[in-house]
Amino acid sequence: MRTHSVGDGLQTHWLSHVPIPLFAVVMGVSGLGLAWRKASHVLGIPEEVGDGILMFSALLFLCISALYGLKLLRHPGEVRREFTHPIRVNFFPAFSISLLLLAVAALPNAPSLAQNLWITGAALHLLGTIYLMGRWFTQSHEISMINPAWFIPVVGNILVPIAGVPLGHSEASWFFFSIGLIYWIVLFTIVFHRIVFHHPLATKFLPTLFILIAPPAVGYLAYVALNGGQVDGFARILVYGALFLTLLNLSLTRQFLKVPFFVSWWAYTFPTAAVTIACLDVCARIGHGGLTLVGGFLLILATGLITVVFLRTTLALLRGELFIPE
Image 1 (cartoon, rainbow, N blue to C red):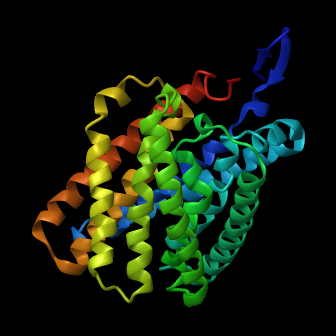
Image 2 (image 1 turned 135 degrees about the horizontal axis):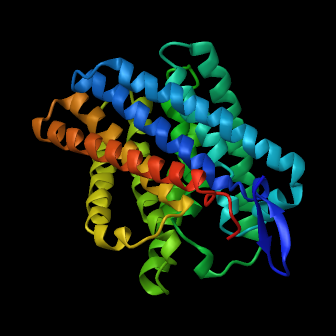
């Protein structure tokens, strides 16, 4: 098996370098599957496309969970190092978010499975939110440590109602939605201040700018689930805010093209899929022709982007460049 030299000629096993942000792969692929499932209702695309992608995302979840579980057993010190890292620790809730997305995926065909996935994912995410916010309150942090990945633990709560409401957990869904919405606004202000008034983000973290898109896009989907499917003024603010942030990020394409491959490329994927789903959902509810065109364009963009990132990740894996020391 491949080993890597770290400092003073020490050799480390590749398994010790399996990163927790790898769960973003599950988020991106499952988001794409849900986008294609939504497109089947709006654009008449066969449902089998979305269902196939979602089954693949479930397989990826099992494989990545097994891989990281082995790392935990054999290299617990490396897991602790990630858990105490000021940036990487924010990716641990990507595991619970993956469970919540798989609950949404399972909802139409396996409601009992969806219920179990939702309960587990929501409980783990709440515990992760409490732990990380408590850590923010009690430890010193430099502004340079902050990037949009800090949204993941808190704003992930917004995702809970999407499966929670259909499963009959309305009040619990309002609870999680309130947490995510309130602290999204707080964190957005802090992150915006850091980006504008301090040193630019390190190159490898530039893709995390796409994470800014996810909270209003997912927030729209959660809000219409909670309010009975009404696309009211607040719903429009959320979805159009997400579309603006998408345009803003697309205007920075030249900068993103300069970023060499890192696992952080997966930050491009779930937010793009989320805004695609939100836009297609608006199309389904209000039947706006212009938004249908936008939704179709975003579906093509999300599919192409996620395909490129997945293939580039696979190439890095085959070359032995994926699980390496930072």
